[in-house]
Length: 290
Image 1: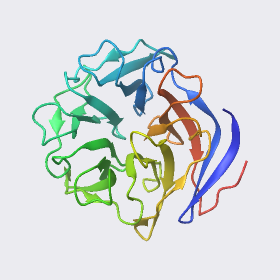
Image 2: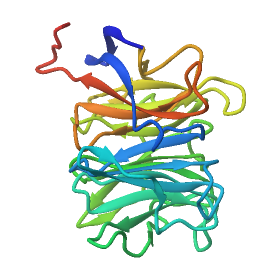
Image 3: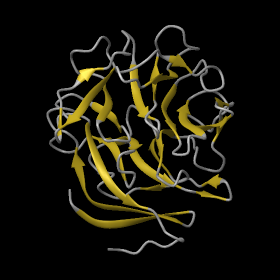
Image 4: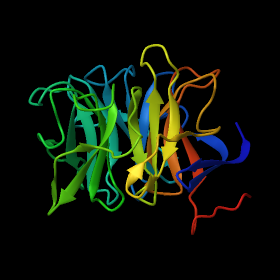
């Protein structure tokens, strides 16, 4: 899967995707089950992801955890805040103090809602729903707090969007998330836009798009703002995408912010596996090819 660095141009921004996609922790995190949306703690010592078919958790969708000790990943275990319902799409905050995730557990506003849980010395604290500023009677997927901690990025299929799932932003003010709005510009379309992450600049977004969840291939796209608005985005080149398999679940690697993680189905794999890819953003509007 090794390729030369390739350039993506979007609204005067450039994203370079370099080298090979690195399979993450084979046999521990990447297995014959389907593993999705890898998030790494800022110190690189903890990895979380979810699986929809891995045995051993309390529900059909469960979040799993592994710890890095002496340069190796420990055996994976279900996290303590799983429920018998769907628990998925984990994302560390940039400071490592919280994990944001989605669940359809009782007590939400309907469908899949966004929650957060504090990270403690003992493991994890009490789960907190994010409330009506973020959640709705529809489904919310893939929360991600920006690198500066000032905006929450997620997707929802609530009414008022462009069609299907759309990408939303909720600003943070005085430590409280405000009402979420669709991202300005043309990034949201009649297709499904979901599973989004900010890159290290806190502006460029990598996200998944599918015309149809059941029939169409899912690809990753990149978009950057111009005068506060996002264009429709440009499909990322290999190794972020592959013509023979889905790619989604991107997440900035907080331990190495010039990398992002993704989930992909590649020829010969048993299901969705977890990968890391290296990228570069422009400095003063210019990125030089290697």
